[in-house]
Image (cartoon, rainbow, N blue to C red):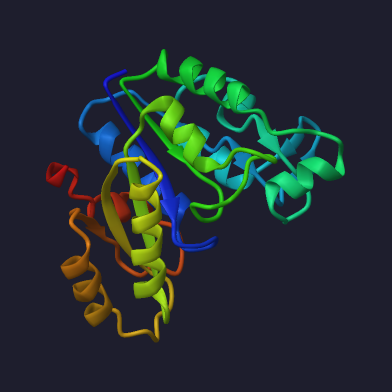
Length: 223
C-alpha cells in the first residue's frame, strides 16, 4: 500500500462519509484498488448477521473489495452515543491494536486505504486513547471535512490546530455545504486564508447521495 488518508471532521453529521465514499470512487477512477474502513460506529442496526452500520456497508460496497464486514467496521454499537460510552455500557473496550490489525489486513488487499473517523477529532477510543492514536500508529495524513454552517470557521481552525499540535500531518481540508440557507463562500475564503494546507474539494450541496458527482469535485493533485 502506498497511499492512505484518515478522514476526520469538525463535528458529527457534517459529511465525512460522503467525502470518504467520493474519495474512494475518485481513487478507483485512477485505476487503484481502494480499501475503505470505518473502524468505529454507533447507532448501528441489528440484523441477522449482527450489528451493521449503513455507512460502513456503503464504504464496503463502494470499495468493491471482497473482505469481511468486521474488517471494515470492527467496532459496531447500537446506541447512537459516543462509542467509548457505548462500549463501556456492554463491558467492552475499544482496543487500538485490533483496529490496527484490521487496517493492515485491508491495506494488504489494496493500493490505497481510506479510513473514516467517528465524530470529531477529539472523540475518545477508551480511557487513554483517542482518534489521534490511530493516525499516529498508522502514520496517516489527515483530511479535515468542514461542515459549512454558522460557527464553521472556529470549528475548522480549532480542529486543524489540534490535529497539527497532536503531531499528525494535516494534508488538506474539504468544504462541505450542509445548510442550504448558509452563504458559505466568505467562510470558505476565511478558512483558506488561515490554513496553510490546500482546499482539496469544495463539494456541491446535494439532497441525496451521488458518489459520482461528489468524486468529480475532488482535487487530490493538490496533495
